[in-house]
Length: 460
Ligand SMILES: Cc1cc2nc3c(=O)[nH]c(=O)nc-3n(C[C@H](O)[C@H](O)[C@H](O)COP(=O)(O)OP(=O)(O)OC[C@H]3O[C@@H](n4cnc5c(N)ncnc54)[C@H](O)[C@@H]3O)c2cc1C
Image 1 (cartoon, rainbow, N blue to C red):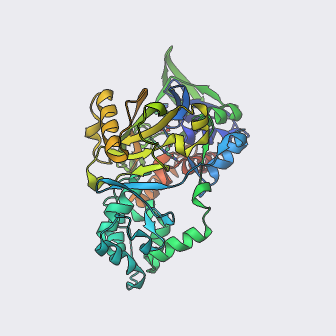
Image 2: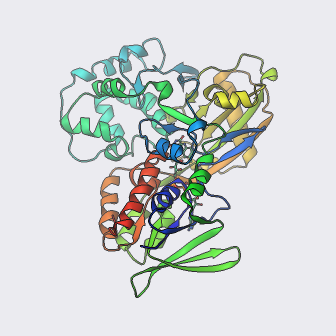
Image 3: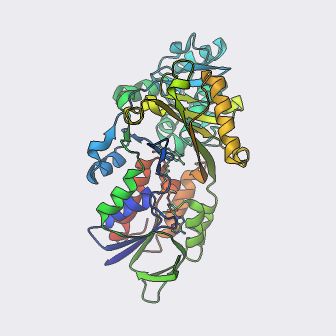
């Protein structure tokens, strides 16, 4: 293999380009004016902050390893604070530190928090004693968990934590695809609470479970692009992939200067499911159909800066809070950037920066309003949650439409079908957030795996 084209310059495509660098001349085609996709840093009130992904988890080290490989080791930062609250029943209520996806390791730790009713806590406390039934097949997260820990715990603890990670509502989410460790527990008929304790006994402490980047995680894509040595063509949208009679691939794209046609040995589509489906349509209709069935949710990130001097009360404490969808608020999650990241606070100590993510999964229609309305909703709800805050000195809205793939029940089978269809097309492969995990680490792993497959001449 002498040459390869990667379509899509998000972190998945750039990770593929990085892996391919030793084997081929690589060209990355990116439709936007910059690489990075959902990794993006901007200046708000003079401070560089992320308006897309902002943390790399230590649970999955692939992205951290890549950041170190491309020269960002010195910029990796641990959060200064780890405490998280849930905005529930009109108040911010601290989530017990020992929890996984909202499920506490010790249900008694919920007593007095106001997060669950007494009945809800009792129900959770009895989970370990429930009879074990091995679960066959895939079910929605809510269906399985409600049977173990109770519906109230699902609605008030699990759903907001899943939503904060863009995972969607427990009612539709696939247990197998979204929570594979719990799916394994379900298969062998074990206890969920016991599994949470087992996970925490091997996991890094909450304060070191994630890393940000000084200057923004948005620095990572450009660092990977540069280190890969790939030729990166921005403002270049691929619209067709054709097979040549000689078994090579031809990519047709549009640039600011007109059409572009390139021939290559291998093509990796590192795109969200919709655009990937469109490119695969002529070659693998089954794969196209599978991809077209992956739902994507949207969100809007409202980043706000407040002058500390105008904040009448002391600033809110902790990392921020998540909001259960059942509360019917516009806000899904709030991160107190100035508390979470020392580098943000040091950059402008007179300001308090935060970001509010708006739009619960399935309620994207509520985002179809002008930016100023989203800013107003964010500020009004912030005041209800944390008290008086003054007026923001800077505000920025970033909209992410169709950005968050939803791993609905049956997602695993859907991906198996896509894999099987692509086997017949050596040199054509796919990677990205829609396949085996939407966190940055999974995207990096997905991009590198696709690169290794095309190098080995084996599609999926
Ligand atoms: C608000 C938000 C917060 C998040 N927070 C976190 C977090 O803290 N931690 C975490 O691990 N994950 C987080 N995520 C998820 C993570 O950022 C994404 O899943 C990941 O960045 C997706 O990368 P990707 O390369 O697969 O896709 P994308 O980033 O979507 O990249 C795809 C690229 O393809 C380009 N493109 C599309 N069509 C074409 C075409 N026809 N031709 C050429 N180019 C094309 C697009 O412009 C885009 O740049 C967050 C996501 C969002 C939206």
